[in-house]
Image (cartoon, rainbow, N blue to C red):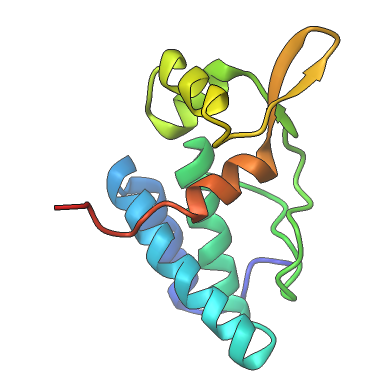
Length: 140
């Protein structure tokens, strides 16, 4: 999908690039929930909403401010080049936690681990599923 031809795209792109990491992550979670409900109820999201979802997802999970090419407007999987299997260090960085905390999530069975020879790796989809399952609000 090409970048939508819409007057708001440039402003949204700038906002995504300049947003503090924590804000971008929280905004991604809100937009992700909205896009999921649109897909559930209507089968797809508006291309502008889908583009914003992708840009925020890229920013929240990888910290990158630009992600091209964008996925198709149908809500399919990302087609951009990305690492499928992540090291514990990459997972720790993506979640803003320590490597021992990642090891704890793996040993607790929360994050499935795969091995390339003897090197443990976490599949990007498993990480995304874990993040999608996190509560939206802090427990009191």
